[in-house]
Image (cartoon, rainbow, N blue to C red; front, side, top):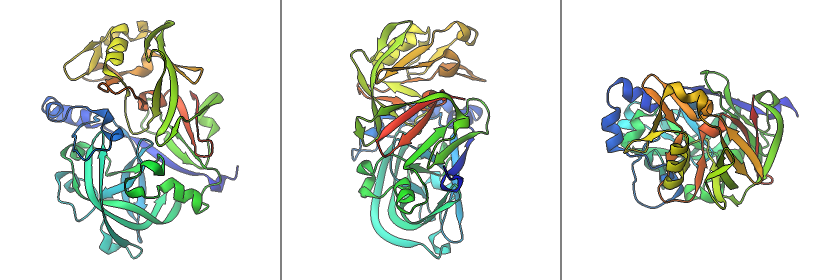
Length: 365
């Protein structure tokens, strides 16, 4: 593979909204105001469900315009649009983030179409514009993206300024061509795939590689799994087991590999069952806590995807913080769809191949 045809974006593992709010003593109040509804982004209704994903922690820098203006974004394989705050926005969430100033870019074009997007973390409304977007050292010319005019309150607590979606065009708001499609079209990458490595503990080392894979990030073979739907990166899950016993996804279900969701999310009854199997106590908000002393005795959980078993040990699904230990399993309501988020991707290097389309998974190095 020609090295120049791969572009790398280092991801910073930063402070989560939960940590920031905890430090300020505001977490309890916030979680009451903004319940966690991780499925919100997978159901594009016109409503405004305001929910929090307080544990997102991986961000990368892109720049937009001429001369370039830099922004911190979440690279989100569970949505398809790019948007950032703009100088036209006066929401609180825009006040404490970097804002794009169109007047300062000579390559900017106003398209004027309104845009509104729902996420598990809230919503934004704004307008479509186009400009040059620099990602990992390459410049995507004339990329259409959203600039926000209003942003939901919870976004004020997020470290990232905006979101760069990496799912398929079929689910893009206003059918906008996603950034990675343009990278392929403009010949900026040699292969129609990108891969994501999330480091477990250190702040450094995580990255998105556009145009290929980095063999330093995984051990063993990559298992290729065909998508069941080229909308999200969606695949078939056969079962979730502990010590050979099926504890969730009995008879099979669908799962989305999503870098933009921090937890592993499933139907509430299944998640409650998994949490009770590992000895966790769930509070009224769906947060499941465990005794930090017990982690080494807790069972591994196996997710079987299209016939291949992917096992996640307790050391990977329990997060240890200054305020205790929680499992990384989040309730998704009555929805039957599963989301395998960062808790899973930290354990398994994920390759997103548009040509199959396939998901490739390999044990993280």
